[in-house]
Image (cartoon, rainbow, N blue to C red; front, top):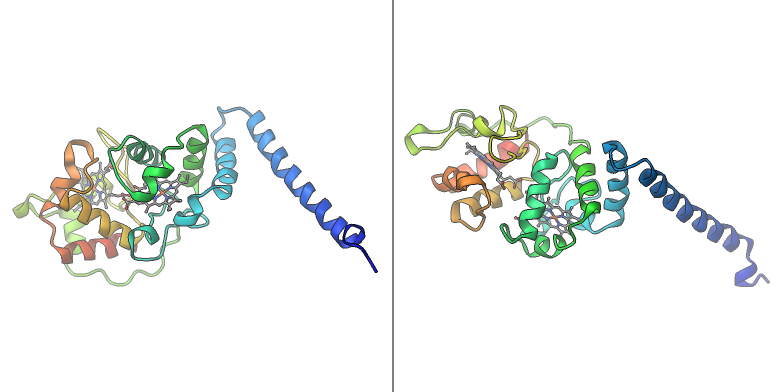
Length: 226
Ligand code: HEC
Ligand code: HEC
């Protein structure tokens, strides 16, 4: 009979656990020792912090976003989003300029670790575009040209021809391509109804004011497939 403490398999596996823990600690120590000036090492550290923290619960294992349809299950994709935009939003939640039940609490923990986590997500791979279904009629024109009759500017003017986002003139403009569709839809409704008001000079509230429900649905589907 083998007692618990003397079973060689138990000894091997706990030695293995200790070894694995030591390696993570060592990896973090090495990354820290490389100094904060190296963005690659900050992102590598950010990855370890992100994977060991709460973000994946809602934003997916690699920051790919949620797949459900209600607010908590359709958290946005963070992977491949612009760093300057992610940071602005995180601080907007922290400072009460933007609201979400989940993020209002999470964003209280703003520190250097968050900068590394966001840097990691910004540099993480984007989903390769699958074969997109044909776009609904008119939605592409709305995106590329806007609708002068209703004072809707072309989304592409600010978000870029491929909805890739840009540094913007006053504040960062997010990437929309490949974003979670239920999330895009909710944001457009929130801009239209005024529940979200944190864009420079309310530009997005004005943009969304004249959009119909059907246009919002079509835009969300179109952009998520870009
Ligand atoms: C309990 C769920 C939950 C957790 C945990 C969570 N988030 Fe979120 N996050 C959300 C939801 C939901 C939204 C979208 C809120 C809305 O609809 O306006 C969001 C939005 C964001 C945004 C804005 C993105 C954009 O495109 O505007 C950032 C940045 C963000 N989260 C970062 C993080 C980071 C970093 C962590 C981990 C430290 C984290 N979140 C943890 C649910 C969560
Ligand atoms: C004049 C510039 C401008 C135009 C035109 C514009 N946007 Fe935006 N948009 C922005 C900026 C800036 C933000 C970031 C707001 C912030 O700081 O939170 C934004 C944010 C968004 C978001 C939120 C994304 C996220 O991750 O939360 C969506 C969705 C969006 N825009 C869709 C559109 C659509 C669809 C159109 C066209 C109908 C459009 N935008 C036209 C500047 C613009």
